[in-house]
Length: 315
Image (cartoon, rainbow, N blue to C red; front, side, top):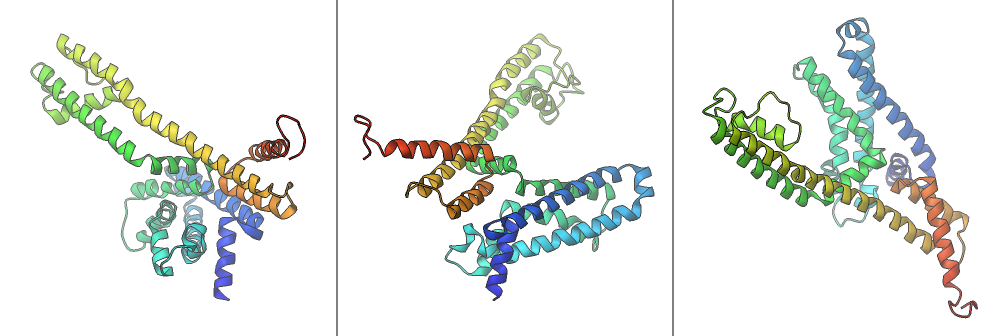
């Protein structure tokens, strides 16, 4: 019986099966609560508002943390029934530990941890307010774009690390070069390599604050070379993420297309298959227009495949 309750809770939290409508309503409620929290935290940084509505902000925080804590514990409890953990050949304890270290679980923990720690440790209120703003990352669970971005980061992790390593090497080389060229003329701004890193960082990222600039002819020429080099350096991680983002979107569409083709084996999509495709659409984060277009295209391809290309007769 416990397993049944756990499976129902998992279905409700994930918005799948017969609970997908109730799950959508729960998601809307949690999204609204997150946005209200973010707005409240921003307004609380205004001293006059913080003083006038102190009790309201405090009560909202307590209620929100209580709700987020219950959600976190429920997700941890029923995580063993999630698709990605259900078929693992290990104990439920190990499945839950694996879930604890997943990105979404860590984000959920960060949403409640600052307030819980405040009960035992004294925090600077400004620091606590900024940490509590991390609660906005809980929207990742409900945002298709953020999920795709996280998947892109995960898939291109090694490539991004390589790109950032190359950028770090270029940063050090630029800092050393400008230090050798400018430290005698501007010892207050380029007196050491660590000091020169500020100029190198601003130049490589094409920000160019202008508070630290080379004045010698050699320094300005070197700065121009670094600026031209930075255009290609910044484009590397951007290109990797853009490519991976598009690839993740294509994979989701391909997965839905395969499901549609599987449903069309008997030549038509029955009501139960339509319900399954609708739940899959929600899970993959596809819009109604994308799903309808995929069904239309796959159905057309299926019909054409049933007829001979040469004589037009049904195969």
